[in-house]
Image (cartoon, rainbow, N blue to C red; front, side, top):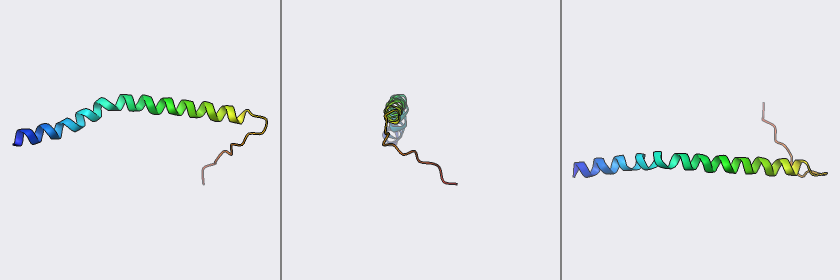
Length: 56
């Protein structure tokens, strides 16, 4: 019983470690696509994108 519990406990972190590189690639790809989309909209004659500035 204890060996099963320990095995199950170790299984989840191992799966998370395996999934991280794919998740990082997906986030990176989405970030690049978003940047390209925003850049293209800003190049329009009348861009409808309003940049947000950080609060001070």
